[in-house]
Length: 541
Image (tube, one colour):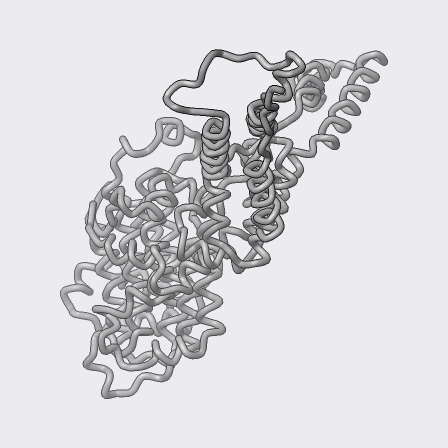
């Protein structure tokens, strides 16, 4: 009697048992990650290999009923058992590769969101970045995707005519026929239904919001992955949230952040006091290489509010800035959020001047900074009068005044080639717009500084001297006659609101104590200032 070949399923049972044990032991987050990574093509591959393995193991049974097809004898010394092992090994390698580089599919968005939410709750932020970063471009694209039916409805919806424009041109506005109105209503209903049933877009948008509204995540990413955060800037979800404020606040909070490193390594001058922005300073280059980026995403407000909040609320910082200067100028200023915020404004506005922006970019935050610094300062003593900057607060006030005069003078160095032709040819374009706004801010700061009892007369004289030297430079350039005229009005009389007589008297008293040569060069300023105190003789009215 012929011996019937036995079928050994021990290896298969062992493998299935190991798979079941591993699946039971792994965490729910790891299961979610596996489910997210594996798509239908992967299950087809796994199912095919699973069938082939069973085909090889049960070959004797299939052969006995005529269902086994042989390709010939095994080669290279292989047999059924070794072939099963190799197939399983290939499947393991394949799934390992797939989980290392998964593809975000529309049908897997709900799983991906659950996975990210679990990582957020567990504060596994670095692992979260590894998962999100390669998928972020597609995630943003999906969040902005409009379904086919919605796009089709927009295409065939009759466009509304502007009745106002028609009347202004002398014509009569056209009245839509009943069928056009009905078509428009039906197509908009189709669009609304399509948008409401687009779960992928809704899930993607919700996931991005989850990421950028988590303050603890943003604080971690700003320090550990600062460039990753830049990918969210400009998305609709970012615009609707306070992400940029949280991001900038986190960068300024942590003194070891990349922002402080870039600011310290970004001190090369370009033209005048305009700082160059090298390629390796990626944060500064992203926000300021095109200054309009800073205006579109509200960066100026994020910086300004972060600085104001620290001046108002951080008592330890105020105590530190009221101490003697010491090593602040050489070392500590590069780790100071107030000085760094001022430097960010300095870079931003210099770029805005050279790119012809017709936007003050909220440089008037400088007056708020100056007022809050004055409120926090301790009164100066006579023994401090010989020091250029008695405390870090004095140094910061100097920077506010000095940078404002830099902006005022920088308009003389504008290269027309840097300004887009469209901007240059626009109606009402003023090449000196930002410089004039800077002078207005300078005047408002001097209005707060000069009457202040917290600053010594010698330091007031020092700051005014900086402003008058700037005026002399501007006045000597015939191409800046409008800027020089604006300087007189803004600093003496005030641009928006009229200055008080007591301020102008203080200004005159300090001006008359300046070096006689400087007063001679600024003779027109002195005459206008004196005349402003005489009723009926003020030329600036």
